[in-house]
Length: 161
Image 1 (cartoon, one colour):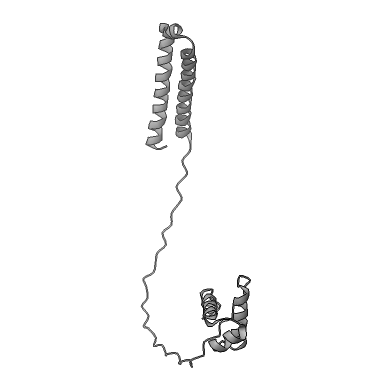
Image 2 (image 1 turned 30 degrees about the vertical axis):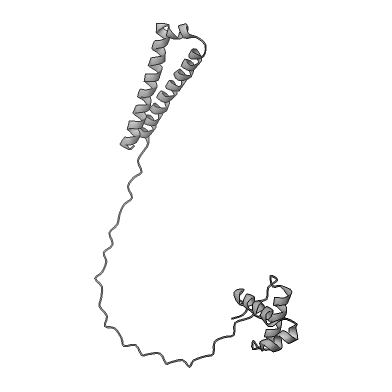
């Protein structure tokens, strides 16, 4: 049991006795009888509280002193062999891979697109990703400014690069 727990339990016992003794002396001298009423009720509560502190402190002391400590675990020392130095082997460079074309990113389709955004996205997809703004605005029935805004929104939503 740690010393701090022993001290705490001893202090609880001492405080309990102090409370109990103060109330007992007030009762014996007749001070409680003279005051009467709620003072007697408070004294009874204090008496019970003091006895509770005494019992709790004694229980903690007895429990702490009677608990068995866990047996220490046996330890084993494993010798570590000295490291063996190995000469590094020359590494042949890997053959250079021919450059590959970047993979086409799939077009994301989601239900959060507006009708005009979906229409513009379908139009761009059908034409392989390359469009003429003037021709697209004419065929879709949108102004060029509105078409640019829609394309910017599709870029923000990561549907277009």
